[in-house]
Image 1 (cartoon, rainbow, N blue to C red):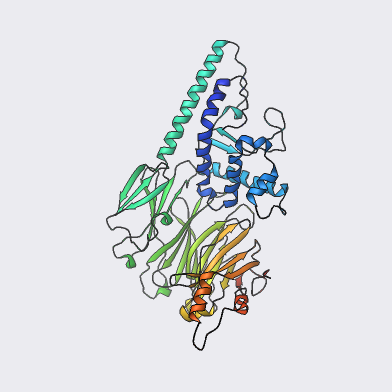
Image 2 (spheres, rainbow, N blue to C red):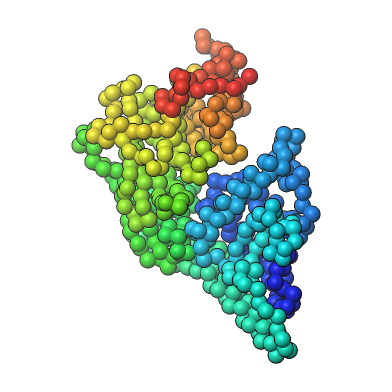
Length: 499
């Protein structure tokens, strides 16, 4: 598999070499992009990139209708070429951002030509996607035709050496780049994309099983923090020895396993009344770089066992550059560009202790400071931090089942796709979980609110007998549309489009 060859007329042997390597090399590069942190929260763009790659051999005949069918199978009547053009432009910018950051040293450059402009050969541009080895001939000034058979031989030899160098560099880069990790007793092992162990670290105090109940994957990140092509390893470490009396530590390792820095969450607070400042980190994310800002790390940590929660912003050297405090637990972080301005927002979900309700908080990463205002329970107010500037702060209603069995309900991780946000709220905090599901548009108008089958079953079983016996009614269902807005709305409750 290969794309249209530019500048290959006078170097046919070089072009034949490209045809042999492109199928595997381009496929590996596409996989690398799809697995990257840059595309972690961009499911629609990942899907579009997969569609373009799948149709690479026939891309000159690929029509927008085919792309629409792949991207929006249930909305083909409402989507058109303009929607495809918008997604292509988003993908173009996302690829540029990727190659300016963690893909800075990748051996193959994947790009999207502007189909409104002529191709390099002067003909109309029909290609959707282009892939070239870094520094490929298509991006260089035209090579003058060889004037002799000796010149052709020299050109062929140079091309062959270039291919050999490219393959060697690609193999070395792939072999040395950390991609995954696993726990082996008290040892952390780091592997490359092929599963080969690169290095390991022993931890005499072990790993707290409760903190790593889902393995190490949720507690580790692989990212090029400095934009220099080197993958750093970010590990949230919590020891097994005296875990309740010790804080989580964020450790940053180089791609070769050298420790670069350590960071510990939280701080001493007067509200803790002498309780040790032990904080457990519950969420870790990395903000994309922008033209004005390098990558930054976002960490959410809760005091164990009380209610103060810190969201901290760190630079690539592990220095705290901003922090927001919340009276409750913000157990989940999602990063997404909610307003289309090219910058990601921080979406945190969990619990508001002041209201005993599930909560969602949206923060501008450039204006992270202060503490949440706790008007309902002033005794939970965190002092000395100033007033926070949340973009949005929502409270989700509690079901009668939750009010009977629990102290609060709890917001789960948000998923953002196609300009919509979807999240669930746990109404049963003991397994098996029962959930209420919510969906919002980009303006945070409520689109759907419904109970899952597990909730309906638990409700029916609990209220089958006794004085409170009743069925889950449409009126109760409607109550879940009353999502209170403390900050960021024009009214007390979010607008509902549910019919």
